[in-house]
Length: 594
Image (cartoon, rainbow, N blue to C red; front, side, top):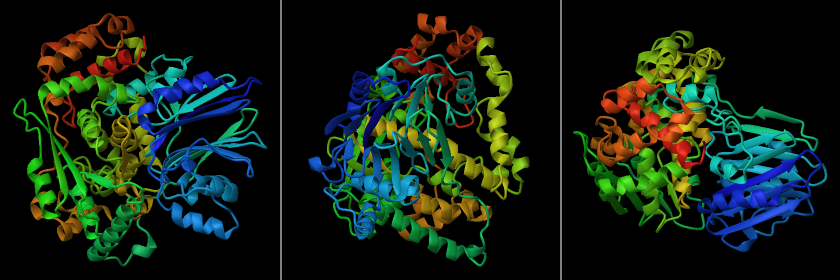
């Protein structure tokens, strides 16, 4: 787990090593254990290292193999690297380290761009071929690891974070109206390749981009499981599905224990993280470090779920850490949380994860986390209304349940110069639901949320906040084999029991029923969902600042109305619409975007 960056030139000039060093420095928190820069003419790579596998200098990056003519930078973890290493040794390759990075180098030489089909894990990889001048960018199947791009005539820069690209300079920071529409419609989700800035794009998940020495490029998507009923599961009973999911989840959790340092758990007390804890205990892990966080109650909303996390910690005798955050600490952490965001994210638990990661990183380098279970196993409230509908019929129901605003609502928020001529968010939704490979509206929604919403909200949130403190987070529910299995589960089984039907049945085998049979919980941060006091003051200052007035994104009358009654408008996901606008302005201002 690390941070990578680099520059590739197509105009005959040498790469700007100083710019690469600025990008690397901007990502120092992602890799506090080491740094490296490599340059060869028109190409330069930078890397920040968080030492998890092969802690010696042999695992340092950028990693060069002169005999093979390859240089690689890599962020993430390949969980099956020991097996791939043995396979490659059988082909005659010799290794000088025990790192997963070197496995990628040899694997790329053996299989070329098809190496991605052999990798089980989370990864963003950039490879330079010395002899051809080719540069290849690769991102993992579920987009757990980010890869941001800034291209101008004659040059491409890339980095693990958007602020790193800003640190390099010469980025078009004009607001992207399409991304802005998505942000306001789709609860701040901005699908790849867009970001809120015109000059920055992101490589989509499960994508390989090959860039030739002259700048010509091509890309392809190498993984996209269909959400359909498959012949091999035609005879499966509910018990069979339960057994299959449990076996696959066991494998996913075990894979994510591969490390040369201890692995802990972010334990919210919900079904997902509790299952991870139970499976690690079942697999013999003792003195397992678990961590929970809670906040002050506010506006009639509870700020913690310690009751449930304590029950799991006691059941499995974990080394449990309760972290309680005061209102003053929360306000003090907002600036860091916003600074850690590669893109503006309105989910209130960004601050929770940031504070939690700060505490956890003091004693632990690697944790497992429960992100992805709701998207993969049907745990959200917007899935049941889609039951029995075709994908085409499900578009309205999905938009009603999930979108914060329709196109008319966006028009009420934005000044006219920022409004797209068509409803680009609705069009994106319609195109996705119309894509072949989803039998029902529930299937289409699960596919959309797994491929897009999950990547650009929960997963991005966890990567940004954990890595801002040099902490590696692993997400077993996004094991691609588990996701492929879940995609084939009949919707009626996914939605049974109020959602996550099969996963709940697995849970009944492993954890106390009271943890499962309760209202769905969220990471509660009341001071963000119910704005008052200092947090409201920060939002007000951002929206009424000279920078906000000059930018003129939002209609003054709309903003004034929200400021007059800060908690009057909530999104379908219980988010605060004033916070949504204020967070965007805070992010833009904090990252120096005029």
